[in-house]
Structures are given as structure tokens and as C-alpha cells.
Amino acid sequence: MTTSATDATLYVVGNINIDLIMGTLHHWPARGTEAMLEHSVMRPGGSAGNCALALAALGTPHRAVANQGDDHFSPWLAGYFTDSAPFWPRYACETSLTVGLTHPDSERTFFSNQGHITRLTRQDVLVQLPPRAVPGDIVLLCGAFLCLRLFDEYPALLATLHRRGFQVAVDTGWPPDGWNGGLRQGIARWLGHCDYLLLNEVETLGLADSDDLALAGRTLAARLAPGGACVIKRGAEGATVCEPESVFSRAAEQVNIVDTIGAGDSFNAGFLSALLYGYSRRQALRWGIRVAGQAIGSSPRQYPDRVSLQSLAGEE
Image 1 (cartoon, rainbow, N blue to C red):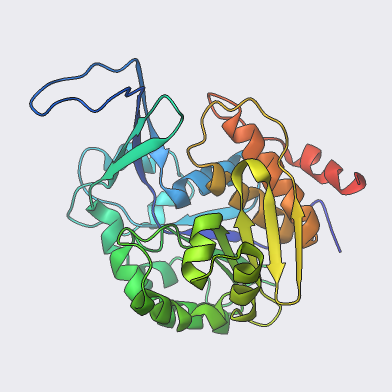
Image 2 (image 1 turned 180 degrees about the horizontal axis):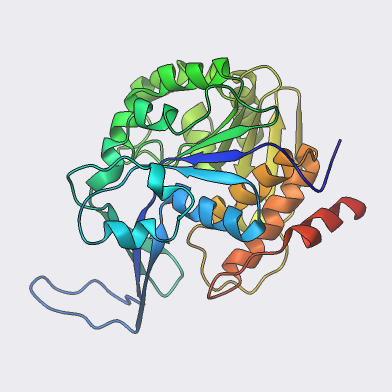
């Protein structure tokens, strides 16, 4: 049953940091030299940060669950999340920062320090969540491999979230050291407490240790909590939902690409917002694709309003 309102909340947990995007870098400079680039922008970022900003623009009931450092960047970053930041624990460390360099072919190279996100803990997260979920509440965990301390606690964290009645979604991102058997075995310890995996194509293949995308998606879905699904974000090809016994896809919409950074995070915001309002997974695909498409086709970044998203339910 769908509705224009909901009592549920989407809690976005993980890496909220600063992104400094610079470009365009046409070739790597020689060591010891200096290069001038045409443009730069500093903005809130990280998978959790990008998703939370999209949710705010969509008007989706949400809370950004994170922590913060104690340098001069900390209040600047917190100022973008005024409803959530007062609950963030503070650590005596620098703010996490990512420098992204764009290239002429639209590919990007990222450099990140460690900073505050590596110190986020399970207890930091749980104290910012209600002791019992309202029906429909969703917790999205982002930046798994970057939140180093929290990732070690994923098995206990996800088990607790499930006991509290939350639906749990995870966007792992790409492991900095690549996929290996030990990492896959570690993730297997908590997949059974996860309702949704939100991955891109290479992440899906890497986690499933497969070269067949549909088979990889179904295999991962079968390892999730009963009724769970693996959602594969496929960029210009659209997105796919894999359930243990079925697969369905939707093509991307044609957009003039301006800035692809955070496209997957914007998709997450749209997809999970639809579920929060009671729409089906097929409709959630439409929401995710529409939100991501408008985000990457605009600068400054723009998002569709919820009324226009809800009108998609009447379209074939």
C-alpha cells in the first residue's frame, strides 16, 4: 500500500566527509612541479553524506548517523546536516577529506586521508537510533570499507539492527585492497541480517566471485535475509533488482551528464525513499534512476520533487 506520507524514517549511517573536486587534469604532472586546474568545488561528500543531502532535497524523513572530528572543518561540515549533527560524537582528530581529480574522459581519481570516519563505532551508531524501529524504518550503511572500526563490528551491528526491527540496506563500495576470499568470508557473517545490497556491477561480481552479473546478483540475494534483494547500479545501462528466483531491470533515462560523482548515492536515496513510502521494488527502480539522472545532469546539483516521483506510479 502506498501513501503520500509515512511514519517511517530512513537512517543513513557511515562516511560523511568533505569532497574537494578539482579538474580537469589532462596528464599527471612531473614530481616537484605545480599544475593549475580550471575549476574546483568544495562540498559535503562521502556516500552517506551524498545520500543524506539527496534525501533532504526529496523531503524524505531521514537522519544522518555519523561522527565528526574537531578541526576547523568540523563545524563547516556539520552545518549542512543541522538536524543530525548535534547527535554526532566528536573525536580528537582531523576531518576526513577526499580530493577528487577529474580527467578529460570523465574518469576520476580520488585521494583520501583517514580522519574521523575511521573512528565511527557500533556504539556511536546505536545511540543515535531508536531502541525499536517504527514499521517501515530502514537503516542504510554506507562506505563500509572506509569506516574501518565500524566495519569490524558489522556482524554485531547488523544483528542488533535486525533485532530492533529495522530493514537493513548496505552499500559496501569498493574495497581499497580488492576482493579476496577472507573478505568475502567476513561479509558472509552478516549477509543474513541484510535485506538489501546496493552495489555497482564490479562490486557485485567481486563480492560474488563471479563473471556472470545476473547469476552473481541472484547468488547474493539468496544469502540475504528472507525476501532480500541485490540491487545492481549499472550506470548508463540503468539498474537491476536480483531476487533469488527472479531478475528485473529498468533502463537509464537519457540525460546530459554534468557531474557523475555521487550518482550511486543519489540512486540509493531515490530507491529507498520509494520503499519507505510503500512502493514496490519495480517502482523503486524508477525513483532511483530518476533521482540519479537529474543529479548527474545538473550543477549545482538538483533533484526531482516527491510529487513528480510519486506521479511515476501511474506510468507504464
